[in-house]
Image (cartoon, rainbow, N blue to C red; front, side):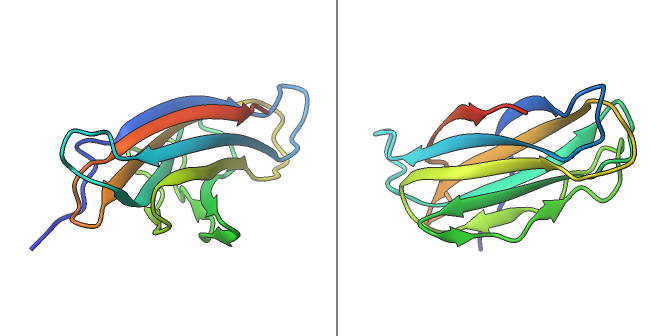
Length: 139
């Protein structure tokens, strides 16, 4: 029996939007999943989730993963400002670079909204695999 958890998850904090607009915004990250040489083996998949953190604003925050032309559904944090994350999204595409987008959806509230992103690469056995992140777009 195996259990998927986030004990070894990585985290990235960020913010979306501008004080002067209510427009949608997207931050884009590249997460590299790799064999870190510590015995776990080759990565099989990535798990991600996002939490909308203070300030508590009307826009919803969501996360999506893309690799090799395959994309997960958008996972949205349903309750702003609580301790819970959005539902986990998983993409099973092996080792390599995954594009992770964090989205602030259009609203009628002008301001910057903040988030906490968790991401984690795993092997087919559920062991933690090498995981690195870099930002390619900051909105």
